[in-house]
Every structure is written in structure tokens, then in C-alpha cells.
Length: 452
Image (cartoon, rainbow, N blue to C red; front, side):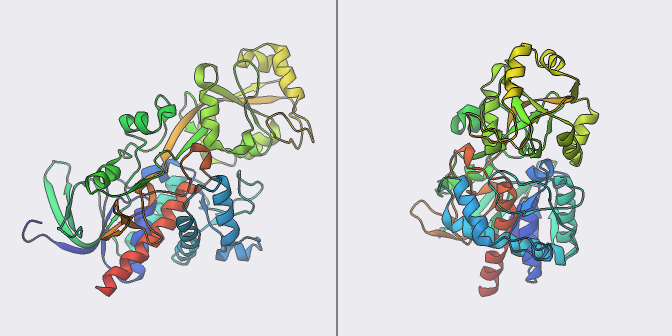
């Protein structure tokens, strides 16, 4: 490191949900920290999401008499991945996220728990959200909580260099300001909480070829820099084939449509007037199903009761205001909207009946009734779920398996808990890894600094 470099106990690369959660835990321990954020305003993937944090055994769950447990939550995460998710991280994150949510609430963040439906794979109501039900609102709460607690956030600062000694101990980082000049800061512990690689088209084509031509609906800062640093340092990588897709990216408006529409009776219909998958399996794997349809599009079709539910989600309402919603008063009008034969759409609707189980394995609670509503969607890549391999304390692992002395990673920079396939993503896994992982990494950093 250059001489006279300023020293901060903990440096955090990225002020998204993961980095801010780590900072909050460090400040709870009385430890100074600096977050280096590439954007002018902290946002990241979280700001583009619905902002729902899954957590079990929280104070709020107990207050609402919701029966749940961290063990049940861990089982749900593991079952969604067919056993692929790293067990040590599933346990660490499902425990860690509870501590994070309860602490955030104690520090003034108001949470609610989504009611009325369950996302695919969840057996209990555990989605914690701010009253606004947006990722942007959650980010604002996290940033306010972190800075109020005393964390320093330096925006428009892109980390370009990691400095390590001959023993692989991090000495500090170099970061670029808007004018391109490189400044340096030394640290006792470095947390990589920066990004995945969904915004790096070349890496997506190499590692996720099925999504090579898909719309990227995530944050452009997901450029794969954490993986590039890890490769240079000869660190382990894991689950690079895992990612969160979404089968309900509204087109051409460009917005995420809540999957609650599918869980409460909506269906996806292609240009031939046919359904093509079990919509209740999950929105992540639905992305590849939609992309395989003619024109890489589908129509989300639903009726009045489902529309009322959709209108409780702000992101959907913005898309409706932009003209995404279409109404069809009868089957013929719906066929004309989709561009298929009336007989085809009638056969599809006839298969949706109370108690009926279709060939995809979905059992319906009721039929759809006119008037029908439809929203045109495509499949999109939202964010990746693989990255640097870490142990249960979020310490980055070398190729031979031992941890780097003071290099930590979590959130988008690290391996998540979604396994190595698109279908392994359980709703909320991104924020589970970000908030749960950020909490764990912050705790590990605090311990290392206090024990030094």
C-alpha cells in the first residue's frame, strides 16, 4: 500500500442490502467501517426487487402467532434446490437473517409480513416487507439505519485494486473516483458485498448460455468484478450455474410483475393459446419456460379477484399505469388479444376448474371468470446466485480449501443458497443471502477485529 494511506477497521465493497447489513452489525459492535459504493445513490439489485426478506422465528412472526421455525425455513430452501444448496450456508443464513430483521426493527425499520398467499416452496408466512412493498423503500431504510448508526458511505467510488501481502492477508483497496484518480484505504478486514455477473454479457453467455439473449432486468453494476478478483487470487468458486430468472417481466414496459398473480389463480398462455408449464413451481424456472415459447413471450391471464390482489403491489400498479393491462370481456376477445384461435383458448380455460389437476401437476382452486385480464411478459435474468465460495462465517476459501485470513464475501459476490440451477431459487433467496449473509459477514468481521 502507498505510504500514509488512511486506515479503517473494516472496508465493505458495495452499499447494497448486503453491505449495509454488514455495516449495521459492525456499528452495533462499535466498529468503524467504510462502504465504497460505485453508484451515486446506493441501490443495487435490491432496489429493483420487491424488497421481501424471508425470515423465520422473528419477533414479528411471534407477535402475529405465525407458526414457523428456522429449521422449517432451512428445509424449504434445501428442498427447492433438490439438496444442492450448501448446508453450512443454509443454516448460517436462515439463522443470520432473523438476527438482522429483529435488529433492524429494533433500530426503527417498520416491517410487515405478507398475508393472503404463499410464494412457491414456502410453508409459512415469512416474507418481511416495509409498508411500501418495494425494494427501493427497503434500501432507503437500510441506508438510513446504517448511516444513523455511524457507518460511512462513499459513493461514486469504484474499487479497482485489492492489495494483499505474501500471506494472502488483505492490506487494503484502491478505488476510483469519478475523475478516474485512484485513492487507497487500508483495512483490517475486507468484505466483498458488491455484485454478481448478470450484467456481464460475456460471462452470462459463457456460464448461463440459456440466458445469453434474455433481457437482463438486474442492476448494471453486476459486472462480475468479485469473480474476477477471486480468480486472480486463486479463490474457490461455486454454483456459477445458479441464478434467479423471472418468468413475469412485463414487456415492453419493462417491470417485474408479482408472482402472487400465478399463486392465486392466474396462468401463463402462449401465442398458440396454450399453457406450457406449472406456474406454481416458481418464477425463477418459469423464465426459461417463457423464453422457449413463440416470440419468447407469454400472456399472464387472470380475472377480477386476482387483479385486486395485483393492485396491492406498487410495481404492478406502475406497469398498469404505463398501459400493461389488457381487458377481454369474453373468450373471443381474449383469443383476439393473444392472437390465437378461439377454440384453443377455450380448451385451455376449460382445463382450469376447481379441483382439477392438469398434466403439469398443478391443481386449481377455481376456474377463471370473465372479464379476463392479460399482461404480456417475457423471461428475464434478474441476478446470479453463484460466486466466491465461503465457509459458514463468510470467509472466502482458497483453492485448497483454507480461508483467506481477513477476506470475507456475501450477497451477490458469494455463493448463495440456490444450488447450481435456475429451478433452485426459492422466492426471496437473493435477500436471504444478502441480508442473512451480510449479517454473518459483519459478525465475523467484528470478531476478527476485536480479537486482533
